[in-house]
Image (cartoon, rainbow, N blue to C red; front, side):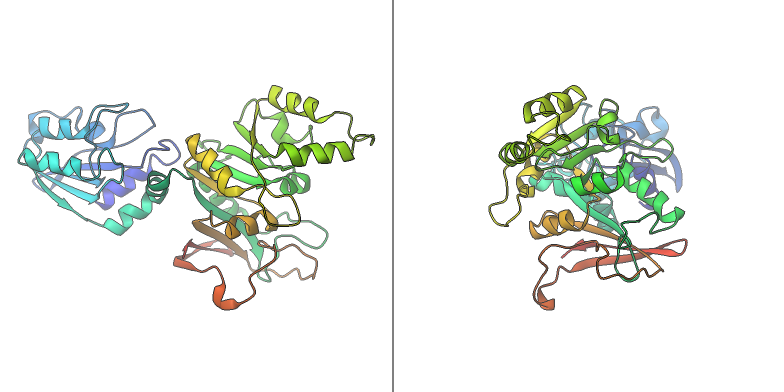
Length: 377
């Protein structure tokens, strides 16, 4: 099963919104076939493992980290080929939560005389596909908040300088995360401060869908995100009412040569998808309702988001309970400064007993830096 899990990870970044699945076929104590789900729309792991097997596979055992599918989707049911190849026993890591499967795959195999054992390394199998299980349960993206800070909790110096908080090894791992998650989200403040590209720079990596929260449609037209929107899918979440008030207030200023309608046309022509989102009802400043934004992104098939926002966006995401996992990179350096930015800002939580807590925490080292990750409790 550990071999199946390792194989499954080979599909990371390529199979979304499908799960990562690996399959190992064993006979007489020897591995005779293996496969994994390589890309969305392609054959599943079991079919890739068994497709070129002949009679030598009869009576073999099959290990797969997720219950074999039993319905016709983009590919034929995996239960069909398992039965056809006369596999004797199937070891399943965990059951599928897809309503079209959800135990039916195991039931069909047993009806055909195949012995099935469930729950092999179940927790590891579920963790590997935590995005899939979350998305299947509620059709909302799995959101992972990521930030890098100094040992005294700063994401930048008081001057605004933030290059670089962490070292090369930690930053390389962030590129792996960008490949893993389907979307990447920032606020307009990050665009103003850093003019990021928000692409994936790892070899053979997949660029995430870029999602920008820009309530008043203030994105600089010469920013790298705008200029590359024709090459990398980009979604801009905004609010028409807030934007109209802002543009009316700036109508006579020289730095605002366009009106709101012209700005909309320009961004659309550049290839940006404009997503209208209502405002949160509470709060003095106009902020997008992130829960509704997540609903709309989920409807677009975006199953996961790496949130690389600044302190205000991070605070809003936590306040609205849309975050499932945190990746906190910590560098062994101190910059001080009462005005230096923190990774999570907002109004704050008044009592320590009500703090947002993480569970299942893990600590990894990347050069001199560490990363603490865990699920929101």
